[in-house]
Structure formats: C-alpha cells, structure tokens
Length: 448
Image (cartoon, rainbow, N blue to C red; front, top):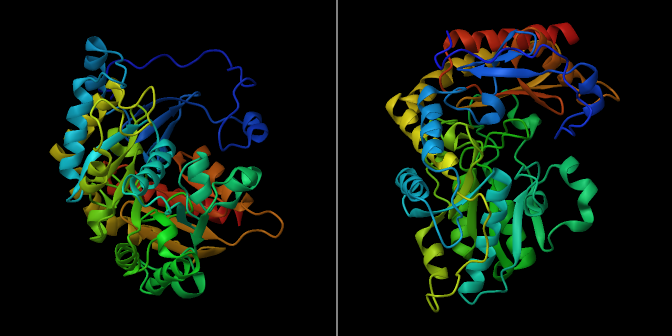
C-alpha cells in the first residue's frame, strides 16, 4: 500500500533518451536496453513498465531509512511551504543551525563544528581545504602534502580524485592532479584475507606504510591523511583489525590531521551514526553526505574538531575567516530532511536494527563462497560484496551480466569491476535480504 497517497501514473509514451549524458554509465549500451525507475517506496522501486524492484543498495548507499519515508517527506513539504531558499553567505536560516547542532551531538567527542556542502565530493574537497588552511592559520604552511590510499574513492572533485586511488577516475585527468599527493597501499590481499567474516585478522601492519611516507617526505610537509574507514565504492574493503588505530597513532605523533571519509559509512551503515564510533577511532575531520537525510535532498558536509575551527577564529571579526562555500550549502529543504531523518533513525531504532541484521547478512552472503567463479566474500555492517574471477579479456563483464540479471528478475545491486556489492536500507527484513542474495546466487550460476 502506498502510504503517501496515490502514485503518479506511469508514463504512457517512450522516453526520449538521447539528450541525457549519464554519469558513471556505459551510455550507448544502457540506451539499447534502459532501466528506468519511476517511483520508490520503502525497500522497492517501481519501473517504467510497472515491475517492483527490491533495492539492495539503498539507492546508492544513501536511502538508509528506505525510499520516501513519510516523516522525511512531510518535513520537506512543510519546509517548502515556509522557506524555499536562503543565501548561506552573510545570512542563514534556522534549520541549518538546528541540523549542525544535532550532528555535533551525535559526532565523536570533540568534533562539534559543521560546514555544509551539497555532496560527498564537495565534502571531501572542503575537508582537504580546511586541513591545508588550518596548518597555514597556525603558521605551519610547509604542510602542503595530502596522503590518500590506493583504491580509495573520495568523490570526483579534483581534490577527491587526487587523493583517491581508483585508476579509472584519475587517468584522463592526470595532468590536473594536486601536487604533493601520495598514497598508502590498499589493504585488500586475497592471498591473506579471502572470505573473512567482518574485519580481517591479517593486515593491521599495513598502517606502518604511513611511517614510511613520513620518512620519505618528512612529517613537516604532510597536512592530512584521508581514508574511508571501510572502502565502499571499491567493493566493500573492510579494514584489518588494528589498522585504523595505528593510523591514528601515527598521525597524532607527527601532527598530521586524520580525515575519515564517512560518506558511505555514516548514519547507520555499520550500526552506529559514524564508523568512527564503531571502530573506536576518532579522526580530526569527518566528511558525510548520502544517509544524512536518507538521500532525500542533496546534502553533505564536514564535521571538524573544535581546535581546528578555533584556529580560524582569529584576526578582526569583520573579516571572513575561511574563503570557501557553495550557493546551496545547507539548503533549507536538505536540512529539514536531515533533521527528520535523524529523528527517524533514533525513534525507530534503525541503528540497532542494522546491528541485528548484520549477522543475518553475513551468513547469507558467505553462503555464496562455493558458487562458480567466486574468489572472495566480505562483509561489515549492512554492506557486503562478492568478488568474481574476471573473464579473460573481459574485465567487469561477468559482474555486469549478474547486475543485469538481478535487475531483470527483481533486485537492484551494484557492480564495480568484477565485484557485486550490496548495502540494503536499515529497514530491510530478513526475508528481503534472503531474496537479494538468492537472486545474486541465481545470477552467478546463470552467467558462469
């Protein structure tokens, strides 16, 4: 039953497809057999031809409370009736202050100032700029280097792709990478950690690679290290036991800021509001987006440690402290949705629900380990991935065909390279998790 009133009628005429240049999509192939969704509610999409598709990826790791949650929808409607837009430069609206305060309350201790953006990509570029400007504000302008990680994904801004480590996102723009960037190795070694349940026991020592970079470049030149606590876009790469703790120790000893990119891991994906809480490691800056308002309206941001914010609050009060921002920073509709989403997460116990579903998803996804061509299965929280042996000369094609099979038979999953990833909403039932995994199994067998 539709809880928000009668749905819009399905389109009666074919869509004109040519004018839209789709992001991260093989446009020519897609337009030969388009997958068009026209409605969504709870755990399901409705396609243009009226089929129900079980959403196994929370939209794109963002609709953590499901699609069109009635309380979030109503909050956006009420906000639109009151205020559509307010400029964020030299004026501000009440919802932005309210949401910043609410986020500071749930963030790790000491992180209590929020800078709003519109996306995860903008959140990352903002965090990198804050890190560089912070050291300059303290009279330490020699710290200009930024350290990312191989296979890391930090959005598609020039800052994000510079510290990111996904080759396809970088190779066409190599001449425009930020100077002074280096990368830690990734922590994904199938010879040591294949089929790990939760956090691998092998690999914590890989954090020592940061010490090598410090010795190479000298700590006095390094401003920040940025990592995803769990790498989502690379295919659910789970951190080894002790790895994040050691990164924190090294950064602290050398005066380097540690940034956690929690665009995917924030707001319940790992059973806590932030992965920092789950891992017991507090960074200096957290970037967020996606689940902050369950994907209802674009919103992102950076939450910074108090001392970082205070370093900017010097000099004459009539001067701007940080020359950065966006026209839509903290948009009223996005903030209203964010406040409602935080209430939904708390009032409906969705973080506890995610923790309860984690072992269920773990058992289900690891039941695929003996299927044809499966070379790894991994999971953490409500995120899981199945890695497949690539076909000779056809990298990613096997996973793409499984993605197509699942969609055609009623479930949305994600593929990157030869990895199938899922990240269901926190409202999922055990039965829905079973359906998603059953379709992945059928797809694996079908395309073997």
